[in-house]
Amino acid sequence: MIKKIFVILLITISIFIIFTIIENPGSEKQIDDEIIKVNKNQESDKPRKIPTELVSEFFNVWVYETDIFIENGVKVAKSFHFELIEENTVTIFFSRIGDQERFSQPKAGTRIVMCYIRDMDMLSSPIGTTNYKAFRDFKKAVDNVLFNAEKIEISCPLGSNLSGALPKQQKKASDNDDVRRFPLGVHEPIEAKKFSGQVALDRYLAPTGSRVYEPDFLKLNETVIAEIELGRITAFTGPKDEVKKVKEHYNLVANKFNIDPTVVHSWHAGIHPGGNYKVPESDDPDRWSNTVFSQPEYIHFHTCGDYAPGEISCTNHGHTIKVNGLALWNKGILFPNIFEVTKKCINTWPELKALFNQTQPKNF
Image 1 (cartoon, rainbow, N blue to C red):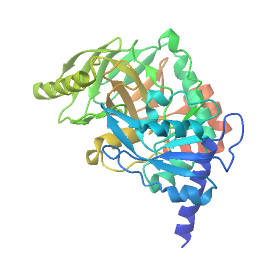
Image 2: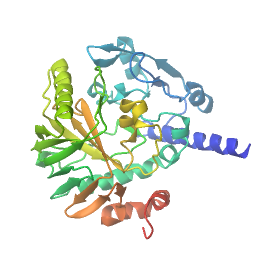
Image 3: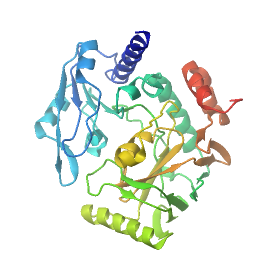
Image 4: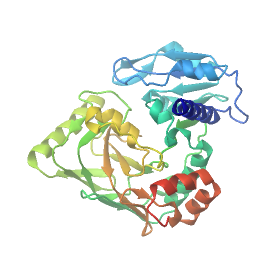
């Protein structure tokens, strides 16, 4: 009984956090705002176990649930739903359609929330319940470190060894506050056009959620190395059969959408240590890849297509990211005390410090 009450309290806290995220621009969230909840794709996205009834029960809101269909490999809401989105205060997407560029500039006075929560366990865990505003501040602090870097070096145990700096025009984080993501698990994606070296492709290549194609993932039995020069893949090296599979997969996706398969568009690493997604990657590589990217032990590369987020993603585990020679991530662990701006943020928010203390080595 006590455990059940505790879980209900955690879920309640999580829902309050979600509604903190979606407060109206320039004002506090009004409880009688109408909300559209875009939940699933009948052909692609798996239904999320976040019941509409739970949201409706706790808050006096209208929740309109809709489906999505596939058009030319792009997830598209039915036309009348676009009107509903503009007419209502907030749209919460439980489908990756919310990541599409077409929704990046919502109508003034409205807000879009892209929710990556997969199930009730995830919602009631630290990644769903830790103060959202604290992580907004922490993201800004990490962005500050990365956007002011003279040199960034990325490595991983499997052979990734990539370095570079941000293009001058990207030395500024996005200020778009009308599209929010929950949980807030990554820093601003870093453009890769000034990065060169190698990236290890291992286990699976997965889709980014931008468009729909089949097969939507590629299983790798051995590691393949992507040779990269200024944000372009110049070659794949490794076991002959595996290299052949990788090339064929990239060409299949590129030909389907008439895009450049050589582009490495951007990358980001996880910043939220509250994540602990345990479903095996092999169960659903697409779902896994588009869930664990918020965890600090993973770095996510967007490739195939000169736009965000490209079409093919690869994920490295246990990476080290050095900024001006200092390891902000070291073997998959994020160390915010390394830089003054991130250290100050952690010390400002006790819940952040407590969360990082649980996941850091001793003497944090």
